[in-house]
Image (cartoon, rainbow, N blue to C red; front, side):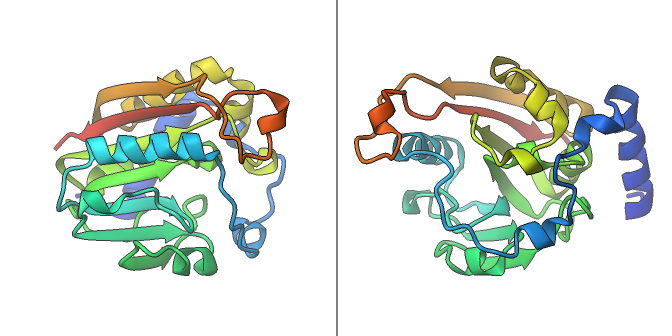
Length: 233
């Protein structure tokens, strides 16, 4: 396998041959460790949408899997019925990771500085990324690394919605219409060269839960989109 520096250089070339460097700039370019110093114990989706995410993971992830929660926080949205062998959380805030009860391992790692993942080849059965792909400044490098650390035919499931922290979301995400973001994520899978795209789903228009702070506005539940692929070896 090529050394990390060569892999990083190759993926940077692939990224810039398809996208402009400005596509992955952000309004707030301050170091992410500073931005994420303060823990944010908030749900990024309403409870109806989160239930949709949990059901998706339960349906797709085989039992007895070794799982990586990429860009993890205080909740991995993994039900106990999955019966995971292990769940590693890789994130930016130690207090958030410590509050996540399902994690068996916790790693602080800034993907936007170092997209090379600190794991050996063929280490995980499944990798999940929940409502965080819009913050990746080096998505092709990260997707390529996920393909490396997954076992053959292991799943990478990317879930997203229309909610975000705009100052830290990359330019191309904000400039892409919501309906076209699925194709954007599919392109990340394709251009990484490490995956066969296996499926896509979306959930929109469900009733917003009555206990949600936006219920009085009469708007539907947060939309949920997901794209998943299996690792090519």
